[in-house]
Amino acid sequence: MNFKSFIKKYIPPFLISAYHYKMALLGATIYGFPSKKLIVIGVTGTSGKSTTIDFITRILEATGSKVVSNSSIRFKIAGKEWKNELKMGMPGRFFMQKLLSQGVTAGCKYAVLEVTSEGIRQFRHKFINFDTAVFTNLTPEHIESHGGFENYRNEKIKLFKETKGTHIINIDDENSKYFLHIPAKKVITFSIKNQESHSDILQNVRVVAEDVRGNSFTVNGVQFNLKILGNFNVYNALVAIAVAENYGVSLGVCKKALEKVEGMPGRMEVVQKDPFLVVVDYAHTPEQLEQAYKSLKGTSDKKQETSLICVLGSCGGGRDKWKRPVLGKVAEQYCKEIIITNEDPYDENPLSIMNEIESGFSQILNSKSETLNVKYEKILDRKEAIKKAINLAKPGDTVIITGKGAEPLMCLKNGKKIPWDDRQIAKEALASHG
Image (cartoon, rainbow, N blue to C red):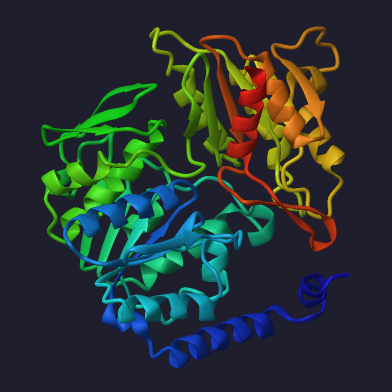
């Protein structure tokens, strides 16, 4: 039994909570409560946090302001940035307070922070003076860890209860109603489906087009042409525009900043466009996977649906085991061929995880079924799985490699970690593919 397992099993939850709270207070005290000297924007939700934070940061920087930010992709202080290799979007209390303190020293005006449910549960958000709270969306994740979806949602809500300034909410998400009733000085909503927005700048939102070049949409007649794939990135852009509006930034500045974004590491990242598309994405929940597949099905330059060849795995460590067969079911619905492979097994048997994904296929669910709608195979070696998918691809196809995105490590048993990069492995496979 490792130390964390021992703590969870033998230490009462109220003592663990008290420990986390006191550590949060201690961290803030040591670094002099730096958030009081910053305008802090907290972004929470299941999907899109890292991309949204990048968009917001770029827009605010375009006004000439310095920004400190954290996300599951990277940390940034003014002009300096570095990869997040901690495998957590919101690190511990001392780290966050130190980061904010360094931002103050560097002359930053704004802080844009990823706020996770686990971070909130462990009081990592405490003693950070949030001026704005942002809700992107909510779908099942970390359900076993939190003991149910409602508990997971309630952790997210805590950020809004403690943010008295501005609340920015995606009202296209069915869970938005739980966030809308929380009092705030100002509420800004954004929507593509529902134009009854509280924000003047976000009226008349219309998605124009999506193809292999990216996404186009209009806000109040101003057309934005994003260079990144995934129509869900329109929502991420709308969040950033709403934040910008809250701080007096014009649509013109937003447009200029967002259209400079060439891509996000590991988020619908294009490794190759021709003769077949190869994309690496972080999608690791059923909803994220379906969004990625839906977006890519229509990204053929020939204006017809492309065939998807998918590399699919699921994280180990006892995390959200419920989703594994659901991932398989989603992949079967959208993909022509599927390669099930290893991801981050931690101390679990990777073959067992792969079998659980496979169990979601209709042929497995229905023993009477004689045919399966999709071809698939299981390849334990993730590098070989990526190579196999690329070798299967024909001109006009799309290869999508999901689960790890730009993560630089693979987590194995007994705490062992090895260097990893899906994007680099895909490039090597493409080079040998000819």
